[in-house]
Length: 634
Image (cartoon, rainbow, N blue to C red; front, top):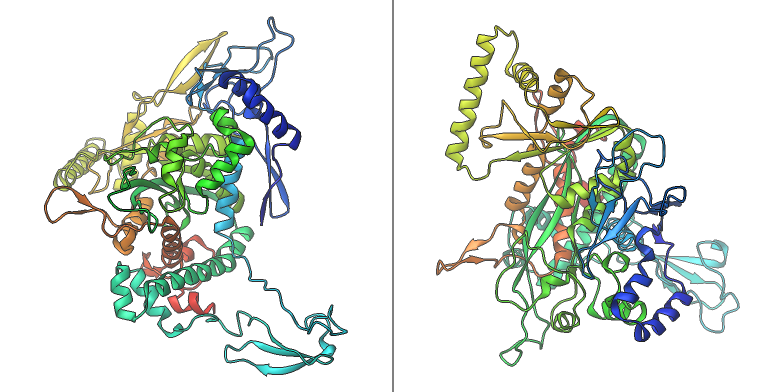
């Protein structure tokens, strides 16, 4: 389905082996920093895409989205970008104030965090692969060793085999006419949907228990199955959901073109238990890692239909310490800048030796640390990601699978999401076919305070309507009031250069006049250039900015999946307990995909007097599905 084209050449690997001992760390890193602007190619559905995400990501800067160039016709031959910083992880790209062309614009000397294009491509490939169903292709042996028809098979040479009925699992039996060997082939989807499922009658009940926050142990007791059987069925159900989505989502989205979409994106953080391998525990083991880690889940939904387009966990469960060590040995990554490493996406700082629990906002040096890697061997496989890499891959996959003429993104002020949006959608932002809005709520308010505050805002809006003798409902009144507020409240400030005035983001959000009851106060902003719109046009857009759909999905996650629920207060009252949190985020990805499928195609809500599913309202299906439809693939 996907394949990486770029890799380090054998000649460069040999040279790195030599330079590793001959050069000091700074000289070695400087010599091989050329990958900063090098494109990594990835093949996806027979198309080749170039991944190069290192450029200015400030949409108000003249250099936004432009590649690195050297101005040979300018004194001292400067480049468009220069790399600054000491020999640590935090190097930055800075826009040079060079004006060597006749294009309009202003260089804002913006700073950009460089990323590894190779690592971004690896993460894109991972997200594609874990959301793709790979058909089981077993190797059949249809003949005995001395058979004359060894190269023949019943699929292409039907006349050379007898059909000998079907097995108990409904798989077809074939017998060679020469050597008389009988062999079974795997049943097709229609022939046996429960192949390799000993207790297939419990699958609907299993699904409902999973989606109703029943813990693993309680589910095993109710269904009389072992934990191993539980996780086998979870994986089987996950594959069924991928097959279902491939037919009813993937194909439908390819054929449908949207005039406009409002997408709501955000990041949820849950805590992953850190479990030692069997035989690696006990008092004699002094080196211990943190007990729990904040694990990011990135999701994007349609604001109006509530359809969840993607949900991805920022954790790689297939990689091992040996894989990292192999790349260090071959590629010498521990002497490279982070932006040229294959494994730059991993958060090594999470595995520091500490008794303190990390917070979601922890920012530490993520350079490869051999000691941390050695300690990690005692724990289960897997590494956390720098969320920016997962966010970029998340948006890139969305971009390839949604056909839309005009796109609006709404998010909070999460830097990883903003960086990802500005880099993935650079062409759309430059062509004014995509805009990004910010939505922030005062979370310090209690429920009661939020309710009182929202009522006050509603009353103020009603008073404004009465004093202005405005005829219209509260929505129309709110838009009109927003337009009036924008006459003296600007989202942009202006910089004069060469006799022209250029807008830049002012970081000056405006208060929404009509917040929801549980918000209290909502502040909205736009981080792309909409300064060319009138106040009425801008107010019409700003009115739509909210985080309702993605917050609803995150609440469903907490309420429906036991392994992703909020932490409990311990019985001693000494702190939080993560007793239900799973120790393998692979199962979190499985569960989230199952939940996403159920909410999109099975769960209904009231819309214009009718009960509809998000998929129906989005227009990619015309019926409501049941859990059995997903399991039995009707």
